[in-house]
Image (cartoon, rainbow, N blue to C red; front, side, top):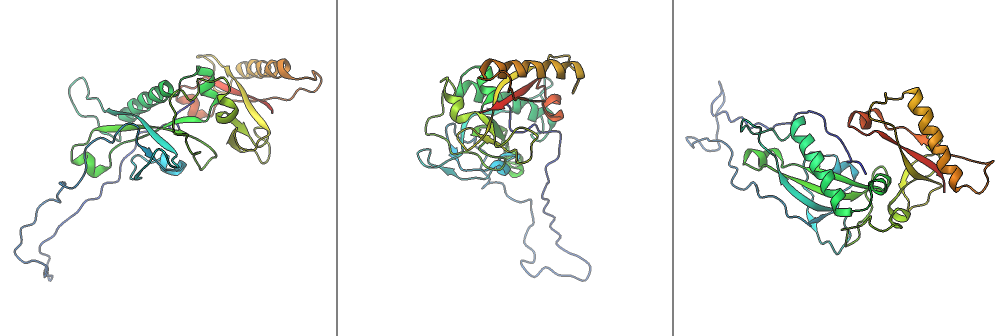
Length: 274
């Protein structure tokens, strides 16, 4: 399992309200003489959202920095559940780290991935092969201005490239069972790289399955020829151990993307027909 996205340093669009009380040749007829002050933040909620709250979001919403999706009952259709709520740490000098900064987002990403991993359980291999993912949200800019410093970690399961699959009512220890990947594993509508290939949850119609992960080594160069050959050979061995006809082996090794590589992923996926 990998986080749904890795955020880079960015900026949050700020909405600035500029109040001008007098301009040359213009008058303000609304309330002459009324005092003008900064916009009130009294109505802006700053409290952290509750753990175990459920929501109905899609992949596009899961990529946003903050979320305004309303809570829904966890006994009804929902696609995300909050498994941890934390607080952005200050620097060693005591300074507040901007919520949208790369430093804060790295902290949140690590914390949320660890929280989701602990929540669903299972082995590292099983989590890597599953469609279980972590998404995280920070307060909106008005909430940050009002003093909010929390972050929220949600568990989601990617069904397709655009939709999360509905979650069961109970998600704790979801991947503890050896049969969990039969439903929540990563599968494909065709061989990786082939026309018509789409990554789907294994509960959906599919023809190929991500069968195993292949370690590439911490020092391996991205797309390195030697590492690639070794990984492909290891993937072939995975297929050879399960195939009924040694003369008709089919497999596909999927290297991590450059973004995944830069984020620290040093393994690829071995795919075989299902």
